[in-house]
Image 1: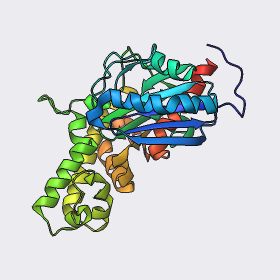
Image 2: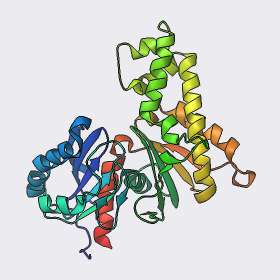
Image 3: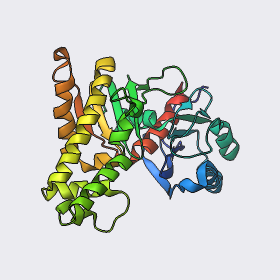
Image 4: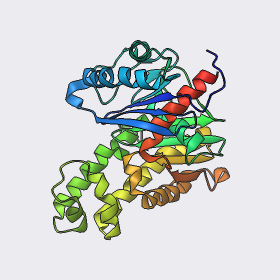
Amino acid sequence: MTNPVDRDGDIYLGVEIGGTKLQICAGHPSAKILERIRLTVDKAAGAAGIRRHLEQTIPELARRMKPVAIGVGFGGPVDWVDGRICRSHQIEGWSGFHLASWLFDLARAPVYVDNDGNVAALGEALHGAGANFKTVFYVTLGSGVGGGLVVDGKIYHGAAPGESEIGHLRLDRSGTILENRCSGWSTDARLRAAAKSNPSGALARAIGDATAGESKFLAAALAAGDSSAAQILNETADDLAFGLSHVTHLCHPEIIVLGGGLALVGEPLRAAVEKSLRSYLMEAFAPGPKIALSRLREDAVPVGALSLAVLAQRE
């Protein structure tokens, strides 16, 4: 589909559909976000609950903003060619759903759907930590673990549905996958167990009465010198680096960007991944790709979704 060159006043919508949050943003072709609606996903309500939220927000937003197109980053494998969902690993009720045509009926604007890891990678490559790099790999450490590869400013696509599913790389032959070790929920569980075993330690004090999302207290526990927190960080970073060594040997990206909630731990995680990765790489690849923290942080998917829509309309 062809479209005139973007005007400064053109508006696009970017939608993030994840396992824990739903974001709908309006923005310019520069990916500057003008308006945002953020909602928490009720896992028990399934895909139907998310679609109700979209039905309540998209038509009115589209009426006011008159978007040129809509980009969507979806948390799971998709057929990006026709906008059909393969499945969600977090939320029931998405399998086989034709999201692009359904959203078109709500907004009356072209809709482009891709995996949220791919979309976040595009956002970071064009407007974040990966800007000015030719090959950018992005890994998101959230409720699950996802990834995306961007080459020359475009998402790399293999055979549908899905690609760059780094979270499902096996770490051993027994079936342990990267997501089992590096997702937010798995790290939360290890932190919870460590705090319980040492209730007087800095980690337990940082977590307090929290019963979920313990990873957000990891940075504070590390700053306080908690040895259990440091061990969990190093184990997580080492597992992630081992997975990323496969990415590096296959694709050799110039930069790997760490995003998602766990990446908010910041420099301790980045440095630990960088150190471990070097030990897993063939000598010819030394010192390996640059390891960077997401610059867009929680805006990686919305900004990438806006960019997805813009690029699709230009083709």
